[in-house]
Image 1 (cartoon, rainbow, N blue to C red):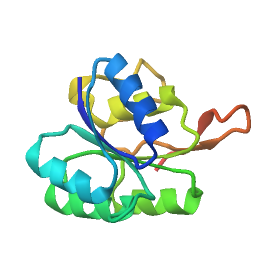
Image 2: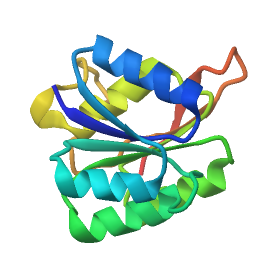
Image 3: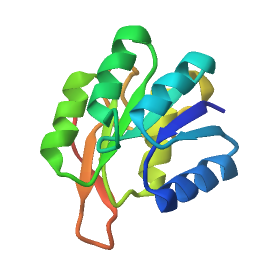
Image 4: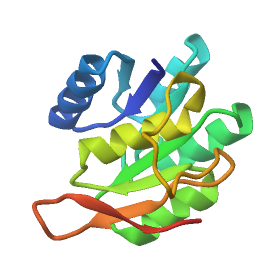
Length: 153
């Protein structure tokens, strides 16, 4: 299972994401901001990063940019409740997926498995793409916060 670095400043979301991924058998490290994430990344080997785009000190967009320069092969998933513009910017900076909050944990798990294919694979899907293609951006559907795919890059 992938080793996941989660960058999230909200304690409730930190707890939820940690419990979800550890319950799925993943090794998880949580950083409250991009500055701590950069430090953690230099000390540990992570397979994938999930980052909120709005965190104190170093925000998610800055983190994506710096990690892309230092560790270009590490997949990064951006999460945000600030709208599709920020999510699109995250993909331009190098995120392999951009998910709107509130998160659908099944979609997030699929994004993690897609981003780290050497550790797992998405279920068989006739629309399954190769790792060179980016994961679809998703947005709220209006039904209890669940997300759906809206575009393929």
